[in-house]
Amino acid sequence: RLSRRLEMIAEDVPAGSRLADIGSDHALLPSYLAGQGKIVLAIAGEVNHGPFEAASKQVNESGLGSIIEVRLGDGLDVVAPGEVDVVTIAGMGGALIAAILDRGREKLGAVKRLILQPNVGEAIVRGWLLEHGWMLISERILEEDGKIYEILTAVPQAETTVTGEELYSPFTLPGGAVADRELLLKMGPYFVIEASPAWVTKWERELDKLSRVCGQLEQSSLEASQEKLAALREEMKRIG
Ligand code: SAM
Image (cartoon, rainbow, N blue to C red; front, side):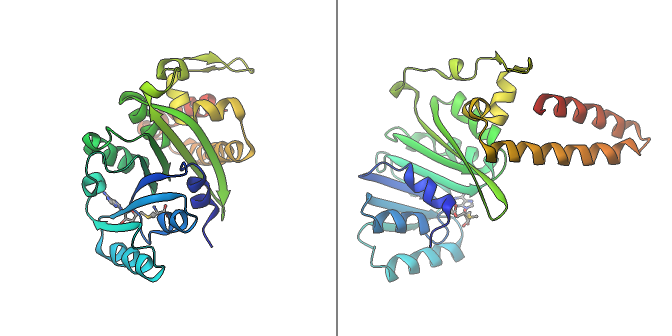
């Protein structure tokens, strides 16, 4: 059975899409979508031989070879310009996702939708989208097996009327604190307004972690530790 995380990513893929799933591992996501008849074509990209073999085996055994092609290569290198209209990149750090998008920019011209699920470093992904003409249209969050995952979906800026400047413009939260661009990139412009239970849990955990580190630093007399402590207190104030 597909994980709820991948299922939620699949829900964001429009019917009839031509998909590139980069870092596809066992090609579970394209296999699920092809099995549902939701996509007309998929490229499952993998940079590592082990997962590439696993993906090829999965596709052959499920008889989905006419829809899914497994390709070995780094990031969007496996895609030709104009070949797909949806790109999914899931289960990696945000810095790696942004690096893959950045290096593959010329492949994104005809792409209508990016569905990204960073395990960490969500702010880097939001920042990349904002800087490169992609409008974040939805943020979703879920907890599965004790871990919290965010799914960020974006479309080309030209396809929407709202601008990135508007989405990330600072505003005052009900408690009086100001949500500025830096905070919105980190915590999510839609999440901050919705404050769903999984999102609240995520930031409560983050605060707990920071409090523990502060506790340890308080016992240290090193100047560097005290500086770090002040920085962490500042960070906690922003989150809390
Ligand atoms: N996308 C799947 C998911 O969300 O369940 C698999 C996630 S798995 C943790 C990350 C996969 O990305 C690994 O199989 C790894 O080999 C692949 N990967 C890492 N860097 C990559 C890159 N630059 N290009 C293509 N694949 C990459």
